[in-house]
Image (cartoon, rainbow, N blue to C red; front, side, top):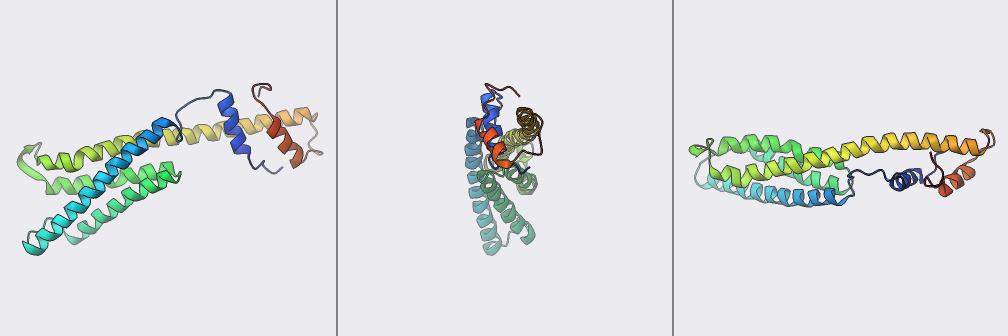
Length: 203
């Protein structure tokens, strides 16, 4: 039997009607985390742009080379990946998007730890390292880690609930037909799904 085209939507409706609640990617908490993460990534992008321009000017006019060319382009790539993570998250690819926001942080942290070392600074780094880079990186990591947890948990629970619910619905449908699978058709199945109310008919 062909799956009812809106079956996933119906399963979500059943989940809501049964009062099965947990934080999802379309809930307010997730949306707030996305906005906070967006602000931090905008900060990261702006700081990276200013930093790269500064490195370029120093290299061109003072012959002071802070980073090599490959590192320069890798910082650009890392910044593009951060922006890409935001876009994917916005498009609904929550797991991939959040992972993409987390991964470049490790490389960027390593690079700026090398350029911001100072013997008199806090923990051996200039104060600019914390204000410009470290704080935003920690926040991005925290926001994305929470969103990633929400997205993965939702995917696991949704798949389990979908599989379990569809099996129970189909068994209920067969029970209504007296166990007759030969005379069942898609139209009857569609009609059964549309009219099924979990508050009246327990599954």
